[in-house]
Image (cartoon, rainbow, N blue to C red; front, top):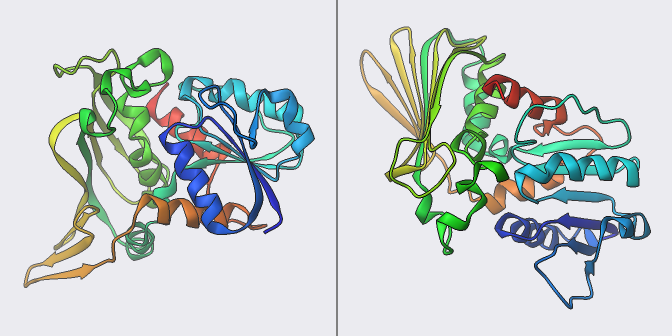
Length: 296
């Protein structure tokens, strides 16, 4: 317990990172830079104070539209530190290069045992087509009014393709070299938002001849799964039911997995990025690749 941590932005995800950093018992002090908190002795008022506290790890949890600005400031203020940027990396592609620090992007689904298992299992498989689906209902995401969330505001970096870009990242990570053929991205529901609430992505990858990724904000039925058609085999990965089913011409077998929370994923991610050679972490380059795949 000897490291110094700093969290920039203290919304719902910032609070979770704070919880995980305390739980890890790796940090002797965790500072917060936020305009929404007052009177706490661990608060710092501005970016100019950052060199004085000399953090070992900085987690950027500000709104997506502010990520690039905050990362540029940190590159000038500190050196040889670890910076974790909440996903997505930016709200649009950038040619900005990292020179002073080691930067990762918080695509923490890479730590889900189901996806780790799947990545290893399909490595030598021939996959004809893959469908990845993540559908949920934005008004149920938070206790606060969904219309006030940054997700509802395109100018603040909201939009289903950015909010649910975990699916883009793990598709590229698991199936390799994900490439876009076509994409439909638009607002089609009656939700009172000005960001895109629907995405239909069609592409291909190294391991799958066809990949279809479907994302939405307006589904009253939560869905998060991967389905794959192989030669004489069908694989269904249900991330909500926590099971993978394997169906061939004779039968179906099911492999079950333990519950895996966001806190579990964040903790494993934290431990990994603090290693000299992280095993699963999403690099700055990979984070940029997600934006490139989306064409933004």
